Amino acid sequence: MKKFLLAVLAAAAIAALPASPAAQTAIPKSGLPVLTTSAGQSNDANTVNAVLEEADIKYDYCDVPTVEMLAAGVGLAGKTSAAGFHVEVTTDLVKYPKGTPYKTVILAIGASLKGMGASGLTTDSEEARVKKLIDACKKAKIFVIGVHAGGDAARGPAGSDNERMIDAVAPFADFLVITKDSDKDGRFTKIAAKTKAPLIKVDFALGMVEIMKKVF
Amino acid sequence: MTRLKIVLIFIAAVLTTLGAIPLYRHRHYQVPVVAGPAVTRVEKLSRFAPGLKGTMADTDVFVLEGARPGGKALLLANTHANEPAGLLTAVLMIENAVVEQGTLYVIPEFNASAGRNTKPGDGYPLYFDIPTEWGPKRFRMGNRDASPLEQWPDPDVYIHFPEKQLLSFLDVRNTNRTWPGRADGPLMENVTFAAMELLRSEKVDVAIDMHGAETMFPVTNCIVAPLKSSKIATLVSMNVKAMEGFDNHVEPSPANFHGLSHREIGDFSDTLPFLLEAPIPFLDQPTGPKTVDLLLDGKDPFLLSLSRAKKLFVPYDESGWPMDKRVGQHCSVSLEILRQFTKKNPEKGIVLSGVPRYAELVKNGVGRYFHDPAKADPKSVHFE
Image (cartoon, rainbow over all chains, first blue to last red; front, side):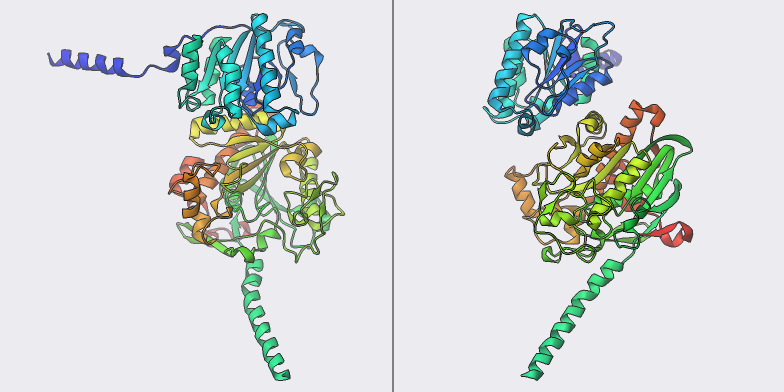
């Protein structure tokens, strides 16, 4: 009888344990090639690129890609870096030759006035640019992943630069990956509940490496 | 009347002498550093810029070499000598690091003149003691800028070389505004030029410049990195947050702000530069008296009020921001930079052991890792 009670208690304790985020939400699959970019020009685009490198996923990156560059596919129309404009092409060109349409775009959400200023952008023009890019993704049926890795520091009061970047990306993302401290107020949870997009929360940005390995 | 003048001159001379004696002692106080197991030689920075030879701006370069060849890294401390967590980290590395692969250059007193200067207008203490198992280890508290005794007069405006950017007159004595320097410029440009020559001639892969910054300054508790170093910096930031539980975000090095190590080292050499900023409440303006306690424990009631009003750029509570935590951050971030660099460039690996990380330093205190110079082989004791 004692053993039976212990077994029941153990089972109840296990059932009461919070499930891991990955267990709560199925991680969607998406395809390569992938373009990474920024929504707000914070350093979080670097975080996304570092996460992909750790996950051994090759990518193309541009901090301010135009709709035309997106449409040009892998290689970003041969554009090269210049002041306030950065391009990096690491995609495996044997598997995905130049011009291969992107299947996925990852937007790193986080506003930096310094970063936007360096690219000659204001919050208004960055917001408009991001919206155009997302519209183009939707038309081309490109899978959009929104990443928020900046935590509490990359949040702000309603209408602030960071929140405007969240508004520009999160409601339109097919998948959201965020750090737990990015969602202290439950904003991302509410958006994901509304759009039905899968939302994964990780303790630290480093945890996104395993998530991205499963996505691609 | 003449007698009164003589008396007044005498009183002035006595007061000046009494005030000058502690400053003279401070300027000539020597801090013993025990060369650890990896130190193979100690050179002078003037080897790379002979103009420094014989001046108070010349300084020691400790060379720590590993058995296996690999990459090279330079660790700079006391670029700003009033931000001493870097100095303690550098001494800790010199006394304890074992280099498994590659070479580590350590300059504990990069602005040696600033390390013998003070800021009397701000009431800086001249010294601070770190408790160790064998008694207190005394360090000089320096200033941000080199002493006018080494470089004087200041210009009305400092015109940066070679970019011709106009900077504050004081920055002509600030070795984090005089990069990349030149051999025939002011003495502090000579100091940074020597370091650039070291980086270029020795083909150094990584340079880490350790600083401290106010809690009210946005560029604090971070790694400042130019684009070429930003991926490694980001990986470091992610790793220390996840593995060691402390924040250290990445700040991009502004492309058009000249004279700083994180900008010019990258632009004028193949080296990847990183500048580390650990919060130092002592440097904030709205604090109580600038005491040794404030320097070491970082506790201040005015900053606590400002923290409650969300005016600080770092989390701040009754525990302050102690020196051990700052040194721990510098140690862990530096080790992680080398680890990430080695991961990406295994043939140029720089692998250290014997250096404590953040949690150990917070638990044990930095003094635990300083060696007693009285018990060390005299040949291994160097005076900084």
